[in-house]
Image 1 (tube, rainbow, N blue to C red):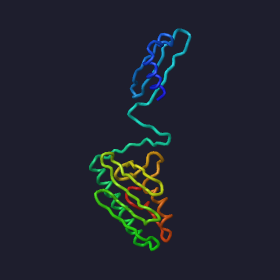
Image 2 (spheres, one colour; image 1 turned 180 degrees about the vertical axis):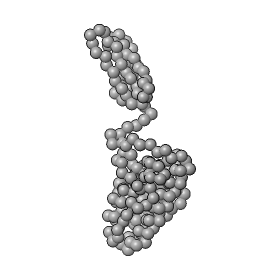
Image 3 (cartoon, rainbow, N blue to C red; image 1 turned 45 degrees about the vertical axis):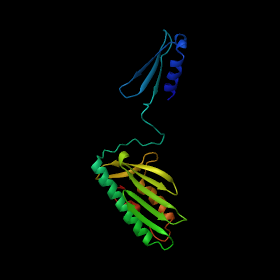
Image 4 (cartoon, one colour; image 1 turned 30 degrees about the vertical axis):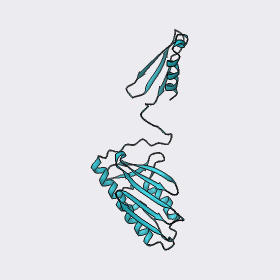
Length: 190
């Protein structure tokens, strides 16, 4: 980022280049932008690298990639949402302390209304990104990517490394005090 800004400044000030030396920009095999300055004898060369402009990095981002094709994504996503829907229905049926609860699932959107006091969870598929999105009244919105294989994979929030099921396991027991909650037995939480 610094190198890109420096290069932009230098290109605007073409008249200054003879006084600070000659600059060259090249793109390496690894996709990095290399900005280097050639110097006169006896001085050191300066080389700055900037990340590729089409990729965002975060300090806590976990670098993992999903290898699911579209058909496998649809199957894994449907199994995950079906399992969550069934489990939320079971939990809300056995929760006398919750009034006005409702669980609805259709068109790839699971809506879990836990009443006015606790709010509504919305979990839905995002087919173009091959993700599952969660909107939580407690922790806010999150986007989960499938990591691993169909046989042994899970939905991960790449910024923190936490899985979808771990997040639900963290938040829901505080709402349902009268029963034990275990989201970690559902499909694709390994």
